[in-house]
Image 1: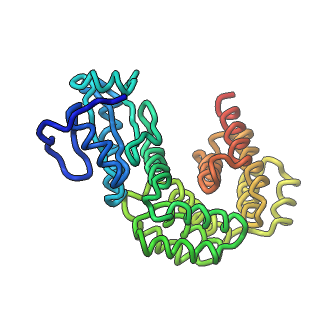
Image 2: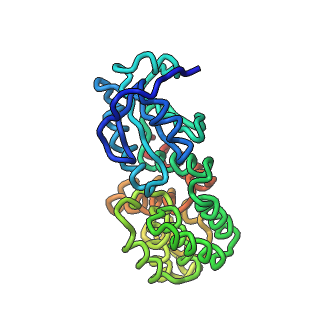
Length: 303
């Protein structure tokens, strides 16, 4: 059980990200987390991954718009606290809400995962006003083909939080599903720089490119006939992949692109590989087409 005092001078720093120590832990973390969630970053100056994680975590916290705070604890200078909290390796990050730990992780994570971590903590604490749940509901509606319903939910979310990257990217996807490519493009072009790495935004950009290509797709029967006549007509295979994707046959498109790679992995400076990546990026990472396609692509590239 922690037995920490409230004494000592408060470290310098703004209200969202501060340095703290054993004497301030009760006030800066446990008490403060009763007002809003607090993320605690346990680090040390000699720790390489800490130097990467710390700034990225600070950035993610600031982008949360004041809904969460971050406290940094140097374990070399606060060994008693580190021992009490059983910090066995660094970096270690704990999230506190209402005076209790609610989540955490060890090691450095990429920015996209840090964002998800913060969203998870906010949702757990109910500090996001239900916005994360609303975005998830919109994603489910979109997956069920209810693009208009999804768009209405997401527009309401963005009215509350204009820089919500997940909502912005998913709304762009909904607009694409509704055929409003110009609206999706305008939305993505106006996205804040901080949203560029969000999975939903990346997926929307890939989907927009694929939708633009679909408008130029050739007749399926004609393309299939060209390939039947000449299986090594890789240009026809590429065009067939575009046409199949436009027709909704994503797996068929991936198969044709993989066939191109198997016949000539460097065809047109890797054009087929680039198209495969674009398709993979447009889909959820756990989609069976993505998982199978990436495995097959890797085996072809390293055969």
